[in-house]
Image (cartoon, rainbow, N blue to C red):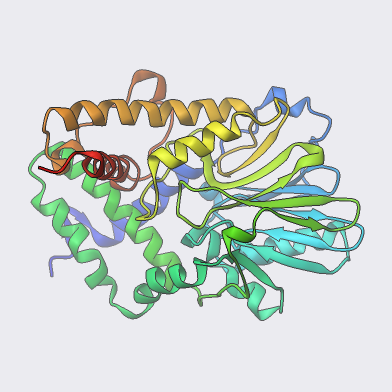
Length: 370
């Protein structure tokens, strides 16, 4: 196999992959004057290790905010709730070191027993640290389909060779018909390299309490703090949010990305359902603090931004669909509008291409049969 891609060595490509992922997922400067003036949010973090910091954002409510440009231990955002009787951890993160970091931060604030930890969904950057919870006998909750999705998606990455997994993505780069398509394909190869590295570095940890959406919403009383778990469709088919209604705080998982284009690569994702979910979030109290899956703490303005991004992708894709543009061509023809150019795109195929593919599938399903 040719281990070079468009003149770039595999080692350089993977190194560049971590850099690209970090830029696309870093939270940037903590510069949110509207939220910083909110008395619920501490002006200083409880702990800051560079790759992630933990900040108190409410009474007994803490957010773990990741900065992948300084390390990939956590990658996503999470947090924990501290009640009089028990604590509740949110997210498994990108590695056991990430889950350990959050647990250690929890112990800086309380010694109460841990009721459970929750994966908001099954994706690698939210679940590859699950083994830490398994090793420490912390009950792990997640959507009922999470265990199977972890096994089916990341199990093969631990058994198949790296070369075999990357080969089709390298071929797409080599076979690209245009320089634009080649550039897009390169970002996808970088992204797959990142996912593969994460999956191969950790033992798979599986949830010990599967949660069926029909049993939600579920209220958790930790003592003087109550949280509600709710299921919403859109990002992965396994998405559970944590809402602290008395304080208007919501941990959204990847149903919300702040300051970046949403990742849409999951086969169970639905753009139309996701837009409906975001429209529902937009009805929350105007003072709601959202802890997004990636990015900084935010308010309703992030909901509006994400809806605008989805609306623009949908509008452009629909014009291409009506014109009869083949899907594979349409994936590369989206044009980022000027108002959105400041928002990073992690991987063209896993963000833009997959969104257009999902939309084409929806529209083809709606078309009357001949």
